[in-house]
Image (cartoon, rainbow, N blue to C red; front, side):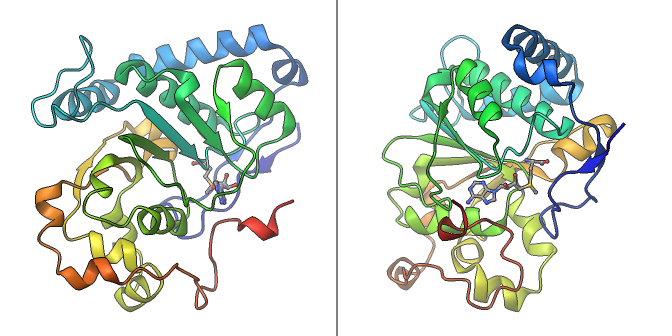
Length: 273
Ligand SMILES: C[S@@+](CC[C@H](N)C(=O)[O-])C[C@H]1O[C@@H](n2cnc3c(N)ncnc32)[C@H](O)[C@@H]1O
């Protein structure tokens, strides 16, 4: 059987890329089978202890009718979701479980699948079609993570390049807007630990400025899913914490250019056609 690799994570994750096998062609072409696979993987995750912990963290943080009740942020009701960098789920088992987790999160937070925008420049035409069949809003535009939010929005970025996070922060860089962003993705502290502090501050200034004041809750995973969900955290930006940043932090808002980055890790707009 042919074997191939996921895109190299470089510094993005803490584990090496894993060998995996492609699906059979009829999986990719058969919508019914896909929906059965989807349900099976969601149920597998539902049975995992670590999912119950994720669910408890969400319950603690967000209000969303009966299934998730909030203690902390009564006013944060997530209605939208954006998923970048899911990867080639037709051929990569990790991306497939990440997709199942995304569906589980949407179900739990009661965000309609149609209110979730997904984008990855690596998606094939059949993957875009599969996502549309599942009800997702599939974007064709490479925003490089520069998505402005006006309503509380969950960003799901599993093992994504640092520039996507930094760009997202840049685009929403104000003490009024950042609290509307909730991220499930790489731990910001994990990112910082894997970099030289000097380069972190020079290349990812929005990440490095906010790291002191963001609220990060680690989302655990079992040994079996280490490759899929390692280094994951829920990251939020409470207004009270943001007010601790010096005023000048909010006025330095030039668009990040990454001129000094040797390996940018993300695909830029003009490089993708
Ligand atoms: C290291 S892979 C992670 C894939 C998958 N989530 C996983 O954990 O196996 C990073 C992903 O980010 C995607 N990516 C790169 N540039 C992007 C961009 N500008 N917008 C959205 N996704 C991007 C890549 O195509 C790739 O699928």
